[in-house]
Length: 271
Image (cartoon, rainbow, N blue to C red):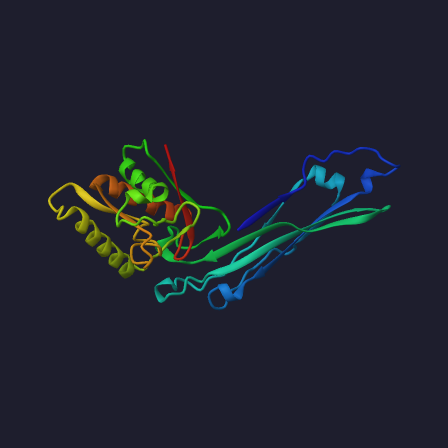
């Protein structure tokens, strides 16, 4: 993982006899590991220096610098339940100094939370890095003919849950303001899928032999699915191809954003 830091667009104005050529700007990075949230034996290798302190003229001529951080892995251990997750935080302190003025120090002028992991095929690329506070959204359009039925079902679940089944006057369904969280356990996914199909048959009867499929939201591949135990879900019969296209979009979102078990994401339905 690389950070590219810079000081750019420097503008100098004469004031009080100050000599701008003697002013300095510093950037000091530091990193730490949250061992309690990481897998066993977490490690990070940082750059040879995490500090740059230069005169304004040097920054002006060379405004950027790069810091590289890596997390050494032990080979593929994901099949043993070890994704080698390393949860880390990066902070930058900014300083400004002049020979005649008290120094300015801004601690925490930049902060990032980063996860390294070796999660295998479930994450798309077998190993990689993500910014854990980035908001991830799966967007579907009501006008997209490939997934318009899926999109309408999710829209109703989020905005008009009284129109959905199982029926409940007080039902609310997560995904818009409350996140969904990925579930990768294949057995639990299958159990949720089976439960959702059972609910579809309760409402619409036997639909075998038709082009329809039982669509469920939240998805079977989330911890908020139909077996979460709180009734905050919806099922609906929709065109099978639409349902499958929606599933493909979901899986692509997982791998493109490196969403692994327990990671949060949101839904966004547009017209």
